[in-house]
Amino acid sequence: MKKVYCFTALLLYIFFIYTITYKNEAVFVKDVYITQSNVYVSRINNKLLIKPKFEYNNYEITKNGNYKLYFKNDEFIGYKESYFNKLRDIIDKRIEKVFDYKLRAYAKALLLRDKSYLDEYSLQHIKKASISHIFATSAFHLSLIYMIVIRLLLGLNKRIKEIIALVFISIYVFTLGFSPSILRAYLMILTHTLFKNKFKSENVLLYTFLLTLLINPYQILSVSYILTYLISYVVLVSKYNNILLKSAIIQLVTLPIIYYTFGEFNLISFLVNIVYIPLFMFLIYGLIISLLVNFTILINFLEEYVVILETGLYYISKIEITIIKYNKVYFIFILMLYLIGIFAYIQHIYGLTRRS
Image (cartoon, rainbow, N blue to C red; front, side, top):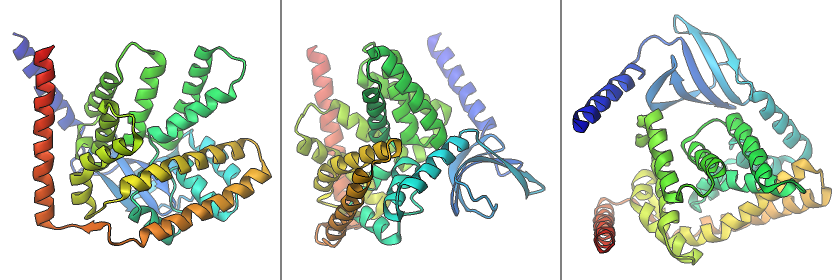
């Protein structure tokens, strides 16, 4: 009987998803995220999209943020911006006031999900060095901001600090919008704060994966969605404390996806990440402190610091010998090794289960 109930529930869910999926009907409203000339469409007519759409900003909307765009007979007639855009404007204006151009570009990219101010050369160097994920707001950013808020709340009870930090993170997340990496990181922080020590981290990751998939099953078609959960799972189940070894394992696990999707793979990317993740963590920390307290000495230091980071990325991007371009034979070989590794891991887990 349980099987019948499960099967019926699955059919009802599939039917429900079908009814709330956009099917190229007339457009009345679009939910979008705008950064200068780029428009990311997440929903149309309040319905799910099988694949997110990207458009050019022809709507004469100059401020970045989340919007609802309204249409009549396929013609744009107006928009409504998110209430959280006002907070984004406050942060944006503060960044404009405190930082000069170079530091301003990095502050907007790292804190406001807006890479449009980074020049083309910087973006190319970041991509070639395989550290683009640092600029995609994720657990890396949210956990750091969460920690900073807690440390700034001196003299308060630990639990009160955590709740205040969670409220702060919640407002920040709604301001930025929910990308797969942001939603996953936010749900994990939310669960950890509200149900501390009641669930294992692996279970929390599984619950957030299932929840986000229930909300929008089409996310499974997104490479960033797959990578964000795959990397998080590897970090949690890996028993090695050696950061070098753990980074190498992450690189091996994600190799087929990155190689196939981006058409190339940098053999030294795990070493670059080991060096640059802590360096960018310090940069984010410095940017946040500078926004809170206009400390001239720190800002001047960060300006020179960014130049050093860019110089390092420039030289790393020039190392072509470690970059493997896409080749079908290479890919099949890597995929075979990947499948063998998965099979060996399943056998290992099965063996542990039987022994227990």
